[in-house]
Length: 254
Image 1: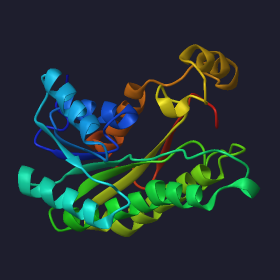
Image 2 (image 1 turned 135 degrees about the horizontal axis):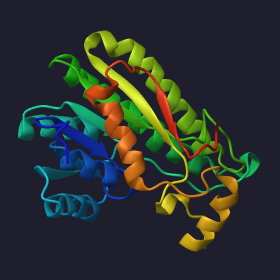
Image 3 (image 1 turned 60 degrees about the horizontal axis):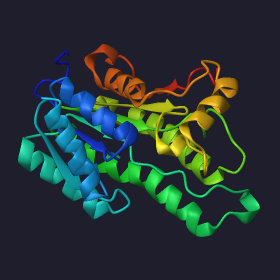
Image 4 (image 1 turned 180 degrees about the horizontal axis):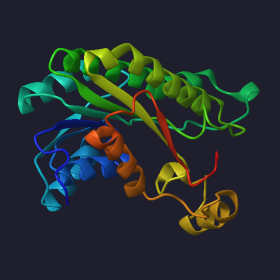
């Protein structure tokens, strides 16, 4: 265990499961005070319990819907009031949405996916940057995907469009605010050991067999592997990395 984030306050959205939960736990193990945010109270509270069981630094939960600007404003404000600041944010909340060809895409699915995956990141960025630039700077890592800017899949128009936009938004925001002392990057995972990477009715064994032939490294990523990339981007070890989108997908888009 290291202490790269000792005395740092970190917000992780989408922290109730998967990559968000793994990242929240990883930040806490390295000394951070973590605010685990999500829409399901029981899930983010479970993340906090796991952090406490890890014997890590302090953690609290906050129920917040990233599609609601007022929720995001409250998340940042309450974090600062309770913990004294905000130094790092991992904007990770996201959904796949029901897949299907463009001609048959339900507009409500399109709007929902973009509202969570893209607008949610924008709402978070606005509040996080506003605090950080007035308080000595900070670091932000957005979760994008290898589907979108880096690669496409049939039937995934809404998800691909939203994540391509997150990749581009990350780069523009990074250029806009690096002189404010706010360093912004993205991580783009490939298939990861979460429910989002399972097709309908697919088991873990089915997924492993499918990925053995479609992913050069021949396996799914662990959530800890993605968390490690996020923590590197958030740490001083990557202090000269600005506006980049780190693809962690086992070679799929190489």
